[in-house]
Amino acid sequence: MNENDKYVKKAMMYDLLSNYYKYIDPDKHVLYYQKHLNAMQKWMNSMQYQEARMPQTELEPGMSKARVIHASPDAPAVDIYVNGKLTLQNVKFKQISDYLQLPAGQYRFDIYAAGTTNRPVLTEMYMLHPGITYTIAAAGNLSSLRLIPFVDRTFVPTGESSVKFIHLSPDAPAVDVAVKNGNILFSNVPFLEATKNINVSPGRADLEVRITGTDNVVLTIPNLQFKADTTHTIFAVGFANNMPPLEALFAIG
Image 1 (cartoon, rainbow, N blue to C red):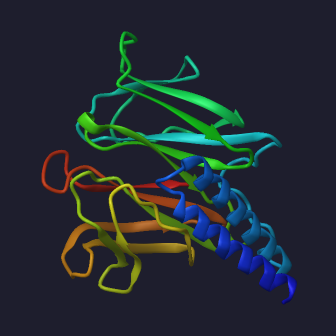
Image 2: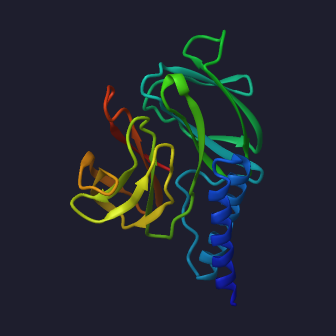
């Protein structure tokens, strides 16, 4: 077995472990996903890919990055405290914060209704690992609000673009994401699930979201601009059967 095969085998093993621990042990999920990314990076380097530019500034040793998306359709604007410090203020539904660069370590996230400090709506503890970039979604209905961390891919082959999809609509069924009137890019994605990144050619594209296994289009995503050397995320937010309605948010990272 040559070096390339070893890296691929390790990447596949760590990917399986990451998926196994996803809902059992989030820390182990993130740890094995990091190992998966590291193995993939070594494989890409061994295949003489040039190192891609990062969608955000590169991380210093011992640092991590995290951003927050407010994806709870019936929740009010919120203030977010990180380790007791007001960090993000008056974050409204559909807003996505900039990435915050943070030293790796254990963090407490407290979510309050905007302008209040008497009782948090939600409190969660997370371990942010060095060298990892996260999107943390405040997702679900207000009555069952959760903070869900997702690991963001931060590399892409030079000259290419990449994209992933995160399903954050509480009442929508599992969905397929496809090119308009064309091939499926992501299949059978349920609520609170993030797909892996896939590489796409830079340029414009029209996508659509369909109920899994059908041609029933529940959301159209027209005229997306995929930039070269950049990773992107499509978020499905809102309600499929209520207000505010289902829509797609498109972000770099």
